[in-house]
Image 1 (cartoon, rainbow, N blue to C red):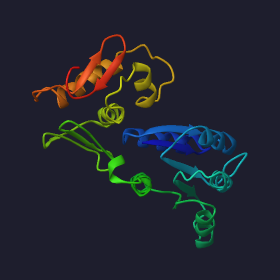
Image 2: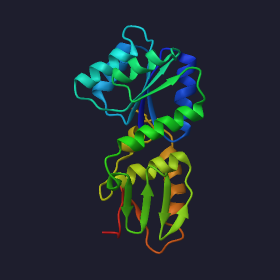
Image 3: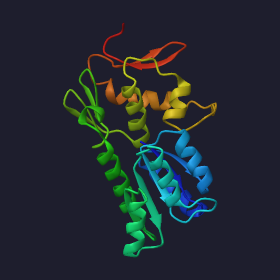
Image 4: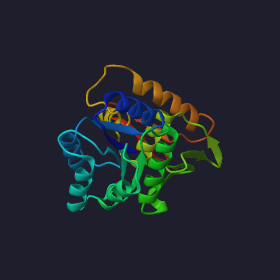
Length: 226
């Protein structure tokens, strides 16, 4: 899932971004209100995590402006202001949840994932199937022929991206941007390493491979070698 964190405290933001990425999410960070609003308008995210007190533009005005433009992306407000009136004001500004600082990261992660589940329109868009391979984006489980497959967070994101584009050739550039959040080529074999590990888990013990290399183009998840 793609998450935008709008937080001006670099130490707090670094901790938050690191934790969300370790949980398997793709995360962008904006350091002030103007930057956060511009990025939120330009890109598609599954959740916004917005600090209330920001330089240049406060968090509530960001959310209010997005709602006025029809943007319904779920937003979690972070704030040191924890009185009932403050929370009510945040929710009435268009926030979907409100978490008072200091917070436990485990609670923040649970709230973010709850917002993602709440925003999911229907089961068909949260479960991907290719042949006998099934990936549940919300439960974060993978099975093939009824057998559980345990993936590391990055492997899960990689398979999720491939299955989302099942039947289509996915290029290395698409994977670097969609799975690793790189907007440049790091000149490493990171994709090859993870692809090898993924093949070992979803194909090695089964009769028919689902993950195929398209020489000179990229990769594709599909049934058969056509």
